Image (spheres, rainbow, N blue to C red):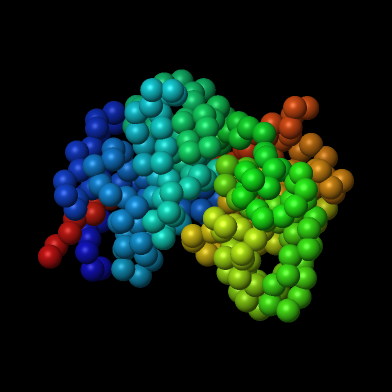
Length: 296
């Protein structure tokens, strides 16, 4: 593998990792198949490194990088970088970072708070083992305002608007659940998914791009989803995306307050409270630990 060796373990529980110019220890983790490189500290330019180390053929390979940091506002802070280097938020990443922080001794107890790009999230470890956990995350209240997504559409929300793309017009539903998502209620075939998803991500309606969620009902309050994440491409799961699917399904009368969102990586459960705030519950797990060391 060009650029790295993955044989060395992380430091012991609770000990802060010291990162050199191009050497760092990491944990490889996944939440419902959404996989991440998880590190401690901010000694590297992770935005610049992300395209290289997230590459599956030439790097470690992942859907993004999660950086665990001290926080003045919460128990721990998370920064997340997509494989293209853009900083973002991530629901599956929050669950992985929660398990990582607990395993590394950065937090104590089963309930704590994580500071993210979209605000402070309330965490509850429902079940925790040495390498896996079920994690519940308070995701807050989604925003329907076009300015929050952002989406260049008129009106007070972006729920159910015509979106022209590649010679056809789609019925689109956009919402902000920590990052921009656009939901399409269609059981998409492979050709349409691969052809239209990147066009939708970069559509002029979305000045900061959007993730795309092709969703279809599997039964009462249960939806299948195919995911194209902004800055990543196809992923097996997306926590903020599952929140978007549940939100749109509830607001359009397609589902009740508890929704199961089934992706290729697994199932996430989204519960909506009376005030509209969401709680996401799903898995997080360690895959392996290692170290990246440049050899030039």
